[in-house]
Length: 339
Image (cartoon, rainbow, N blue to C red; front, side):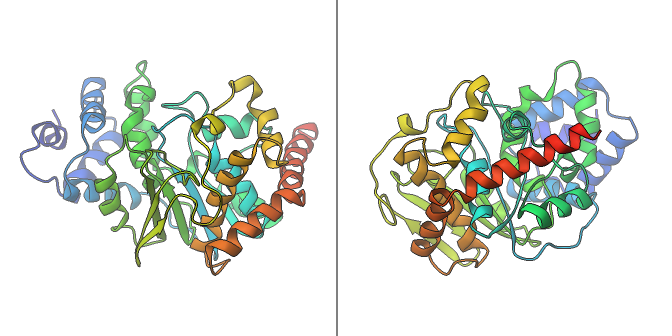
């Protein structure tokens, strides 16, 4: 068995970055078989390694990705999943923030622990995630919002996924959800990531501190969700220190998860359109606007939370958010119609 896989299973000592590099070289060369690949992912899913090993794992994967030209003033919003079931708040917040003038590059995945991941939802909306950095930049310039495809993740993970077939990667969803926000590499200047209570929040907070190519905000709350909630006590861990957003701090604090419950996948696109039009309930509206406001504040687009929330609410009430959705859906259909 690979020395790195054995060390991970034994957990006797930290695994240095050099050992992770050797492992990925082995994967790319086709030298890690099905059994060892499953053992590797199963161990990571059962329990993430120590901080030093985790930082080495992330660094070894990130260095295998092509660096891109940074898109100034851009932000990515992506959560870990695994919390109480809600509709896709982060995707809605991306539209609202973009409609209010914030440049947003959204990453995400298909569903691992939920019925509908952000990629699944975007495809149901009729929007094609960008498959290259150039296409992402084109969408960003045209709409102020781009959905980056799988190219933002280390290619070696694709090879590892093929190694575990026919098992599939969904069995390892907890690991992928936990590290996914840190593995994606769109060249943004800020990232807002929600971490649910089912994830190792302390480890992720320390891991976020090792990221140097963007400002990372890690959002948590006392109700265990991976998004900011107006009816919860929220904490945002930032490089400059913790930001507290208590229940009802910048908007009314009434409501519950019943107001944010997901709809069946077949109804998701219609519900999303109603949401951006402001017709999905007051609590849902406030939740989306609070998360959109975080994107505006993280990028410096707005100086404070009150003005950022007001700008987000205006993007919905003015029809700008719904209009942006309509434009992006029409652009996708035009592309399809012309082959």
